[in-house]
Length: 202
Image 1 (cartoon, helix red, strand yellow):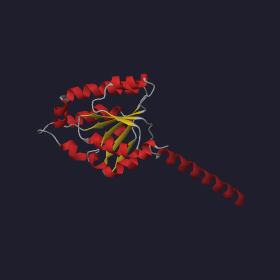
Image 2: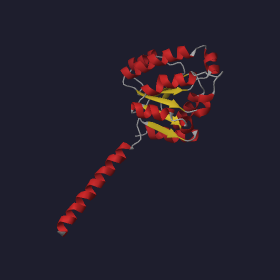
Image 3: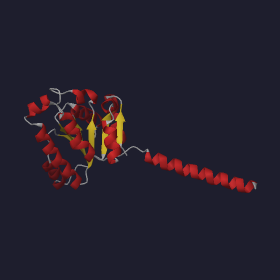
């Protein structure tokens, strides 16, 4: 009887270890590869912050706020294809005005860019790193350009990178769960280097 109880105990222990291992794997942070192309959907200042941290970490990347599908093709033909595309969402009417583009132009460019990225099997990271303040900054009541940029990018991404206060209404949680896209949340911009290292370092 004691041997039977002991056997059951060992089996239970092994099951717990296996279950714990599965859970640990499920909670493993998503990974992406270098080199990276950083661009914007909406011409907000957000991409600049990523640029600064990527430079500080000495990760190979290109920064092009107006990147097109042709840029991805050119890199591939040169034999140095991008492995990851980070699209920072968040629309700035001032930024788009300075660039001479409209939100319609941005959405069209990004749609073609995403299509080419998927064709090349480039990992797409949809990022929103300016918090709820960016989402609330409209030139007039009813301005939804920021939300349009989110809709154009995040549901089609492979990974979401979101500052936590920008998800106060659960906007990105809904996308993450609905589309089964892993989401990385962070509290402050000073945490971005740590997040990037976790993403890109093997």
